[in-house]
Image (cartoon, rainbow, N blue to C red; front, side):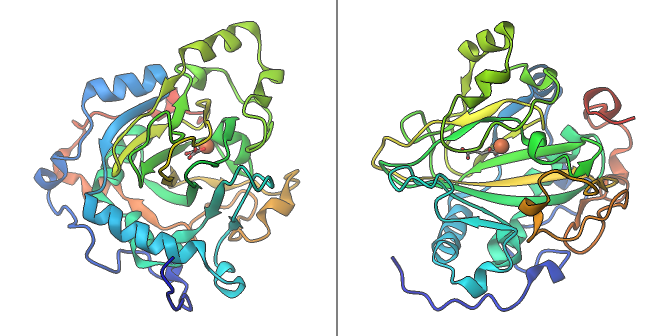
Length: 324
Ligand SMILES: O=C(O)CCC(=O)C(=O)O
Ligand SMILES: [Fe+2]
């Protein structure tokens, strides 16, 4: 592994805008058009709870992120302080490594600027149907041969310290992902199952089965493998059941995940039953809009898309999320 001197002394959360030139930012409605999801893609997201095959990064951009990732994976205790969560092996089993970290955007310029990737911002706006902020990012990496699993789960079961449920996850491959190296899987239609309890993120892949009914168990037979090339992404609803099996290949399976939320999302931390899991998270005061510098506004629909008017295909969030 490269021996790099780490210098993560600056908290990049101080910058609520891109700091480098990794992405060319669209200026006009015409510039945005190339990134726009079609009516069909939005309809499939509404039907299945996910949409995939969306290109976010070039190979060069993936290379930049992967070289930053090497540094992040060898971060020292001091550097790790900016992360909201950092586990070199979340599984606790040395033969089933799953590297999982939240908050890389505060440490390196590439992961910081990734939040402003135009293809991500356009699609997320359409799928949330509303201006949005970053909630946080995540890294999920499985080394060759002995990667652990990410057990079946719904993201919002981990996020009830924010409300209402108007969130979206974008999973971006930093390696080509297929069944052999542990790609993500989705259960189509599971976003309509309602909120299920947390049954664990590592360890037993199938723990969630204990809380499912016959019909839901049957739906797992129709699970979809999200095989993709690096730089491509899928988006999923906060209640979509998803998970990934172990990496049995000779290649790593690295991914970065962007979690977005409506610009009006509130803190809901009062009495939250897993408060200890939040000790390194930014403050999220009860019933207050999460609008500190830790939750930069990534897309202001009115401002960015003035020229589009109301024509752009997007989800009606009142129907699709738990929002009144
Ligand atoms: O990368 C994985 O295998 C899991 C990712 C995940 O849980 C997510 O994107 O919400
Ligand atoms: Fe997830």
